[in-house]
View 1 (cartoon, rainbow over the protein chains, first blue to last red):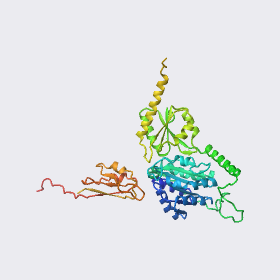
View 2: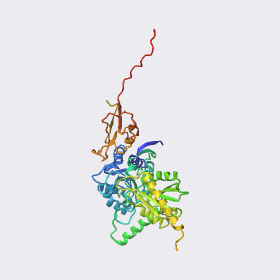
View 3: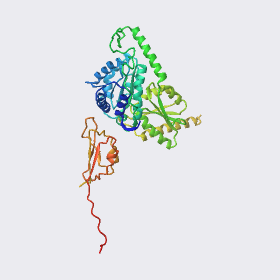
View 4: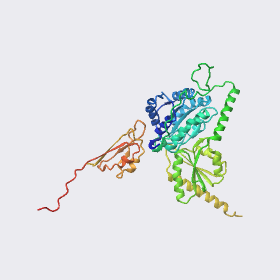
Length: 368
Length: 86
């Protein structure tokens, strides 16, 4: 395949189409709209379903319905749209049907703005809707990663019968850069692959099935919850993904995901040029969170700096994982402002200087 | 009369301001008085003194290919003849 100059939103849409997306439901919202526009062009010409609904509430319930047939379905939106979808997302999670969501985050709270932000980490990574559930959350930092993780999201969603989210921001969505799309896969025909045992495609010559999220007896609901938790434990066991940069000999580590991770990588390079032994740890799966890897990292560095485009959300998970093994500092910009690498570099230098002061204070003989 | 002139596809512009960084005489500004249908403030050319040379750097850097450059074609003067043949 060839590398092409692609916009993040369009690349994710085309990637989904090429891994056999059968139905897309959506509603326009900047900075995600190009994804919907690409679907509007491509899906009908391939004879697949494209439907622009009247609102995100309708969208997510259409996704729910289509997912119950065992088809590959998805939707995409940006922060305020995702908030509208939360009820439906909880229902899908409570019904054990697979689907893929793409959230191109923008500045908030409220209507906010259309600039890139990471302020919806809590909303998406911690579940968002009501009830005890988690979504598989994948966070790309480049257009190529956005393509690869969109493809992966479909496989994971179907493997674990759960919702997989590609959590990105307006920066990756609007970015144009060279990337390679996967080859076109044929979509699954019912004749090639029988429907999954739970899918609803008409009860011809079989007893009826029901896909539902209601279990009125508390004991039944608990049994369902135990099954769901067992599956989440399996996901935490198998699906942790992350990437490391210059961490082998690092004294300090920067932890950042998505666009903040990309900015931080430039800052880490600059810090290295100044002789500071700093590395970058970039979680790719935000749920499951790379806890064990961060705990191990914290036991061999002198300090960590978490960089996010929010007021400090992932930093809570980093602190839980680090569990006091090393100091964890935070640097963040909010409201849709993307930090410059030199701001992150300054934060790294502060972390190093504070640690040096602490070391000197410890080494100094105590006055009587 | 300016040598260069540009047109900007304001609907395609996402307000990234890369063109403004490429413009050497700094003639490109974000138009905060106008929002396109996606909600972005597009770039506009502010060139009261006619400084645009039509160099095309803005069009080259624009990741979404939103800029078209027009350059005035200046007729070349025939080279002055040196010496005369007898």
